[in-house]
Length: 333
Image 1 (cartoon, rainbow, N blue to C red):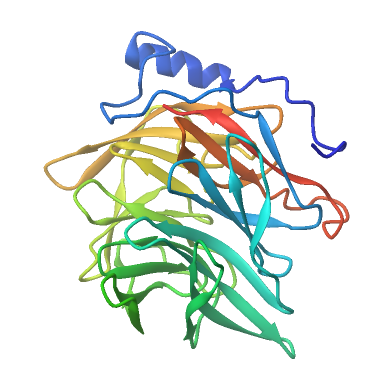
Image 2 (tube, helix red, strand yellow):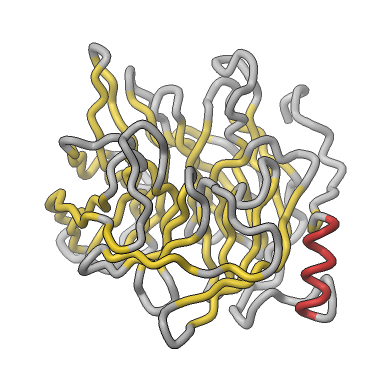
C-alpha cells in the first residue's frame, strides 16, 4: 500500500443524518435497503486498494467475480486486478492525449467498453472503445464527431448508451455479441423536462438502466435523477423523498431497485436510494449515504464480492501527476 494512503480505520458508515433516516425507513440500520438480492460479502477483503500514483482514475467497472478495471484520465490506460487481493496490472497501456472516463464490463462477451477522448493540437475528439478484457486488444474504436464531453455509459443486449455531459443527447453504438461487430454512432436528443445546457457545464453524467429497461441519468449541474425513454429521449424528473435531495453527482451504480449515486449528497459520500415504480413513472426514496474517512472525491463505483467499491478521483488534489490514488471498499445496501 502506498505510504501516502489515508489510514484505513474502517469507519465506512452511514452519515449521522442518513443513519437516522435509514433506521426510520427500515427499522434497523443493518437492514437491506431493498428487496434486491445482494450476495453476502466475501472476506477477507482489503479496505483500500492502491492504484498507480499519478494515474488520475475516474471510471471503474468489474466482472466476472471480483476482477476490476479502472481507467485513467492522465493517459487513457486501463488497469485491472482482483478486489480481494488488491492486485494491480496494466490491461491497456496509456497513449499520448488519451483520457478515459466511464468504463463498463460486458459480461456476455468479456470486453470492457470505455468512453473518453483524444486530444491533439488542442482539439479533443470523442471516442468509444471496446477492449478485450483478457488481452487488452482494442476491438473497436468508434469516433464520435461533435462530442463535447463523453462521460459514462451502460451496455444493453445490443446497444451501448453514452452520456455527453456538454451536449444534450445520448450517443448510441449498436453492437452484436455473436459477431462482435459494432456500428454507429447514432444520437438520441434529450427532451421533455431535461434541463438544457449551453455546452459550458457538465449536465448528464452517470447512466444506468431502470428495472424496466428504460434509462436513468443524474445531472451534475442541476442535480436530481432523470428517467429517459430510450426511443424518444423524453426525460422526466424522478421525485426523491427523504434526505437532503440529490444535488449533483458523478457515477451511478444499480442493483435491482437500489441505486447508488456517487457524491449525490456530498463530496465524500455515496448516496443510497430505493427506486419504486409509480403510475406515472418512477420515484426514489433516500435511504442514507455511505461515507468513509478514506473517501476523497469519489467519482464512480462498482458492486463486486458483496461490497461497493468507489474509486477516488481526488479532483483538485495538489500535483495530480504524482499524487497517490486508491479504491475504497464500502458496505453495499
